[in-house]
Length: 443
Image (cartoon, rainbow, N blue to C red; front, top):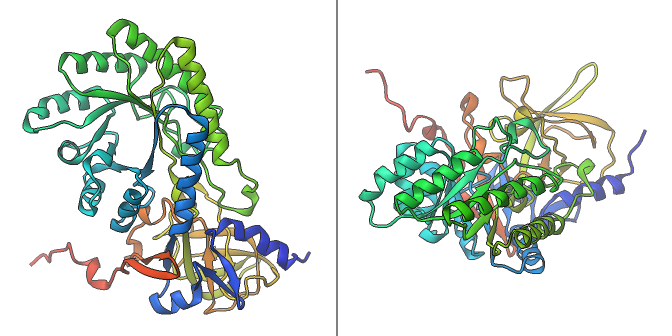
């Protein structure tokens, strides 16, 4: 059965950055032809559009201002994608930058992020992670009692301490892939309620700067309602700590991880306003019921800030037809985007030339790597694509490059920053010399 070309294009364009247009039968972003960019910089090629990033932040700040009468803030998840340019952008927008480990802290510090905007997460932090956090971070989220004791032993070596938050394991997760759930009782993350109260007591005894409580239930969830019971657990614990230990957090962070549509079948999608409004309503009511002051509310939007701003461009190297499938074999895949292999993540795509062409049937998009799981997209209605053409895969801004690898000797792709009709190279493509830069010969 044929697919109406206009409806197919209309379904997929909302997945792309907000400035995406079709001009002279070519896909453009920020007024720039994707084919021209691929000609100049090669493929695979990743693009980040600043206007979409800015719009994402605006939707969160506007929602918080409308729904929450207390002070609030937003944290960008460095783990989703971090580079010097992205870190600089976070500071243009006044965001906190969530860093996991010494490497991300180094990137943040090198890019000029001020100490009070560097927030450090991580389970099982190494000695080097803690040294970097104590040297450069404004906030350190403590994951367990052993880590807290290590921080106490190390603190005398530092002239100042970051604020400490405790990460609660609320025993409740959100509905998402099991690999991205974090709040359940058997999760490796965070303190149990009893351990958290013990940690508060230790902080008081040792005069540690404990200022916040944090919890996180999972990433890429579509329904905010599971946050409600976890928030109740956190507020009950705060009430108990207030009564028994005289401590209340100045800051409460109910994590984040709000989802983003990756595929046309994911639309329509709940807006950010629903997510923020739900948290604000529950927090206001819960604090009023317990006679607690409203804390500073710090949200971690996760991929919903950055995913839609990113687009990956690939070249179709060859086409194969098997008994049941039409394969479009690309020049990238598993090495730059492991998400389909890890989570069975679904993506969509458009050809960069004549994207309004009708689909002739389903296509499977495979990469060049020696794994049967190297499949970016399965069973997607697609036009009659020929070798040498390019395809653009939207919603490629989060957890792709940051989890990429050099598998099969792949070199990590170039990354462009698109803004105001200009394309700025923010990460060059790796070359062959990069593959052996760390190596030593046996003799």
